[in-house]
Image (cartoon, helix red, strand yellow):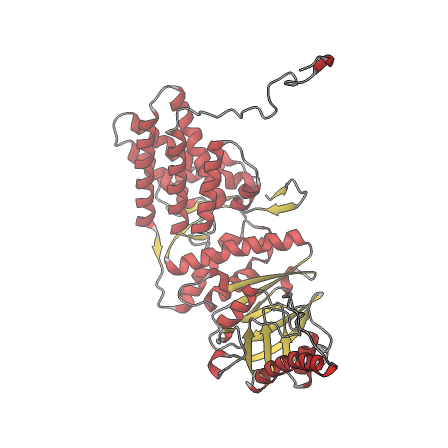
Length: 499
């Protein structure tokens, strides 16, 4: 299910991403803030599994509560939890399945399955196949380091979700333009691009300079000088062989017409982020002067065109030589919906990145949690003392994930968990909840896969957070000093008495 959150300005956000929800909520309780922090760290580190991490931490604390109430010392609980978490992580590493990266086809299938698992709990689950391909293509286009900011996401309202496109190159919204713009060609092939950081227009003098002129001719020469400077700049740009001029600062109407006459395209006031992505894709570098524009500072790409997407016009650069960047243009009915799609895709992109870096996967859908729960329960029986009970408590807490999955899908949780426990006891490692058929199934064969990193990070973060909260035994709050002076209206000439 999704949550609709309305903040104090009345902006509505519909989201399913744990971190997003927790970020927007204004949480005052100090212990609850810790849970928000682990969700954020999970979001930054792995990108997905933010909801699981909060659930786990909450459940660990819930299971520890009866022990605290029976006066078990928190340090003992913490020690047992730490031990259990280490064991759980060890077990994940032990049973996770490695993928051979050498075979690109198999690698691709794996990435798609991981992305599909991530997307299946989101709003866009119906268009899962369509988006998984898109996400995997997007990540495949990046270079080794997989920088996230090289995947640009542009949102255009209107159209259906299926109209979303992935562009192997750069796309940005057409910028504000002056007269003369209509005459510029809208399509080029094999072109050079100049990226600038200069204003191409007549400037009004900002400085309080005083120029005394005696005759009209002198004044004319000042005006001419201004124009000459501008025309010289434009001339150099024209001669450099660049066909498309992009600038971060405005390009005036004179320049626009000048370029139009010479069959060139220009766009001023391009957002810096887009300019940088263009630079990364097409090569070249951003210039702050037009002098000595050598060919190596110009970018180049196969085709440039301007197309209409929805109500907006977009400039597309495709077929870039060093194309290590791509742009996803999302379409959809309502704005909130597109934003939620963007968040879901972000989760999926992060998962695919992680899987490319770490090639170990486990089965999702509560399978790995049940297996860890069984493992910890068996392990706890070998330990004497109180720790045995505490490890058992953590084992029980891990079952919250499959239980929550059952509840979200509207199944009878107790029933299915019993079946799962039985199956895992018989040695079916990868058995988890099968949401589609209200039963249990081998999730590894059903391709519900997740990177092992997600689970490892979730368990360690949740265990750490619960240990942190358990280790606190007292809160001291600084009561706010009273702002409005002493009570009773303070000093004053009450009842007409003099001071």
